[in-house]
Length: 277
Image (cartoon, rainbow, N blue to C red; front, side):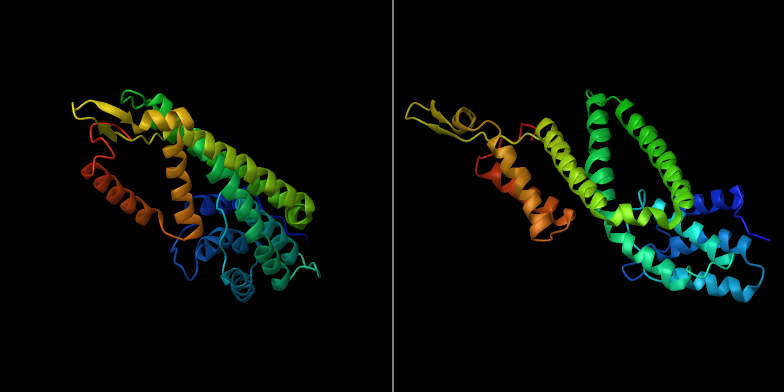
């Protein structure tokens, strides 16, 4: 009799991934234990023999790490492959499943980081910040609700779509179409980040040169605006990107460096402590 995963088992597997993809997270294992947790209800339903259960679960002890929201599709695909293996499919074994997981980790992470982290989240945060003008709590409430709804239903759709497609989605995700999709999303993510930065980041200088009468004859910010409006803001953003992307500095270190720069800038009169940067 052919074994078929129930909706209850699949739903439990998805929720285990949704809530626990970072379970026991460490630099050595990353999302491995979260993956194990998500596969447990499936293995429990598909196999009766304890030895077969242990063998199936051993497949998912291999290292795994990807973008968790979009990565739901990989978990769903392996659920379909595990079902096929339980039904005796000759072309589906431990090597096949782990090969698929390892092959999709990178491409899915690239697409997910550009689409979710680089595009969706900045858009939602931009809207939320606009709603928070004047100290309104609506922005925070909007972001919490919309992001969680987007993440939950988006991840659920991808999980069950991956289960339906099985290994058929691999060619698209790692082929030429997948590469084009990753490049397009990266460009879109860059545009969104630039738009959000230009809207919400503003760096100006209060540096002035005074004449003998104590009146300013050179206001640096006015000169910069006449040549290149927003130059300091652009340099600030590019500098932060350079430190994190090229020099591999952590965001915490970059923020601490900015605090030092701001402090020194105020001391020497380059920044005005009464302004919002």
